[in-house]
Structure formats: structure tokens, C-alpha cells
Image (cartoon, rainbow, N blue to C red; front, top):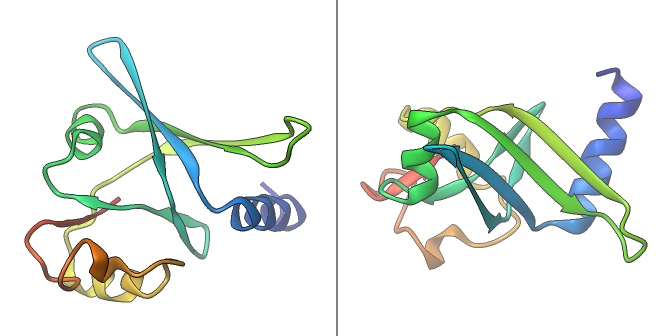
Length: 117
């Protein structure tokens, strides 16, 4: 993806905020709303360590994110391979990249229940 396309993807996704994450497990698709953050070219998702999305990604890391960009049904899809981030330093860096207060769900980046995808 060239820089111009990357900028357009970033802007559209930031404007809409919430999107939908699709995972697959045992040939069954699962879709759920998430509110990701960006770290350079990486898309970050905060979740619970024991959540279904975490379990699904550990089994099959291929995912897709979907944003409905506007009321005319323009949309954005980003397909990739997800990974669970366990390194505390990375979790600490990512903690403040989200547009919402993660302390509503987790006490801190080192909370045992906090997972970063």
C-alpha cells in the first residue's frame, strides 16, 4: 500500500472510530464491534485476555476489520494477520493511543486481564 492510500485508510478509519472485527473458528465467522487505535501501520485492539476474539485469533490469526465510512454505504475493509502482544513495554506504549479511557475496563497496562491485539 502506498503512502497516499495508507493516509486515506487511516483518515477514514479515524473518522468512523468503531468498526467490526471478523474472525473465524471451526469454519464459523464471528463478528463483533471494536474501537481500534493506530500505531504507525499497526492497528491495535484492546480486549480481555480470555475473550472469544483472543481465543479465535490464537487459533486462526487471519482477521478482517470493516468500517462503514458514511451513510452512502462507502466502506473500508482491512484484512491481515493478528497477533497477541504480551510484552509489557508494547502494552504501555499502546495504552494511550486509544481514543477512549481504557481504565473503564482495565486497571493498567500490566493488568492480568488486559490483552492487546
